[in-house]
Length: 93
Image 1 (cartoon, rainbow, N blue to C red):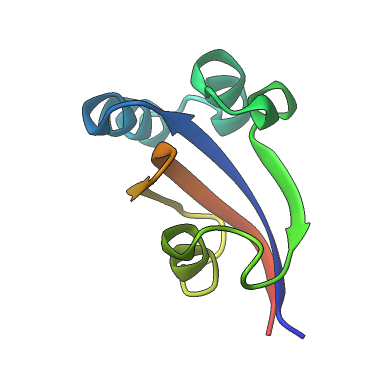
Image 2: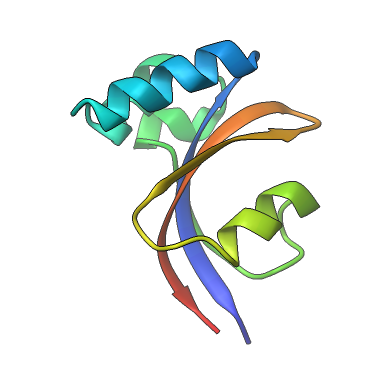
């Protein structure tokens, strides 16, 4: 069965999401940015969501996690919760 591990940053606006993505691309640490800016409780753990299978997250999130390249920052990804930056850290198909 497919499974993945990922971390994410959740914010309210697409603009903030883009700004944070640019900060990470410029060398800021993903986990530190997550801890400071993410509105998800996972932010305290650097945005780490642990391991999950398809269907455990909302569709828009799953679509990225189970197709994106590993260790690249994807987003903004809009869901019912807000805007996400997502980094897939491992995946088994």
